[in-house]
Length: 249
Image (tube, rainbow, N blue to C red; front, side, top):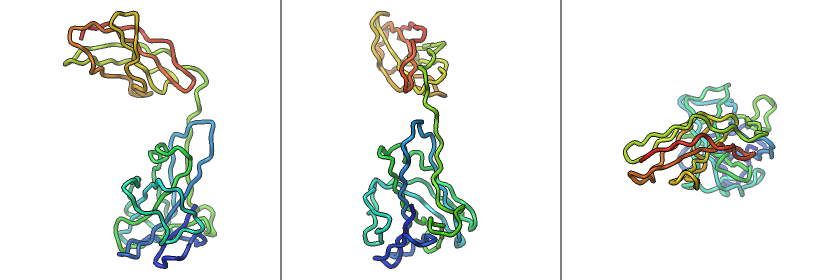
């Protein structure tokens, strides 16, 4: 998954044992990675790109960008046909200082979650110009130094969540603040509102998380009586509703 471009603008370096990354005026040397993540039954939680530094000049650094352009081919990419730098490139971090003989790890989770095809492309560069850093490639002789992608998964739930408990409401400054206890196996929550206690409408889906359970209703009319209840959701379905709270805004 590793390929480089360098001063020789028409040369492909996909068989090189190392990538030399160096920002040097117009002769920038950048590394490119293309990763195909497997289809999994469980949800991916975190994704990291781990690289081994074989050598590094004093003060060197590495920075990673995620690319929307997946059209490039590892065995044919060169400096002349590399993906153009674009405003859509996603900045995924700068690591400094760099120490030779050690690993560096980039958290690429946000970029992975923004993509839908399971194919991820990255550009590796320096932020500080003129200082070379070399990282191991797949073609090296030591497998333990290969670039790797590490991902963790969350097992998919097998049942709907428990109903949210202890829903409370407070009218503050023309708003209604709602809070409730977390439900086991919930991914998010739906908040339902009524003005007569009989007919409810969903006013928000995806409210809260497994660790943050609350919502502020800003679309209330002063002096109006409102009824609220909350439903927990996951990939299996929705829970039964919580207790109902009544409040005058």
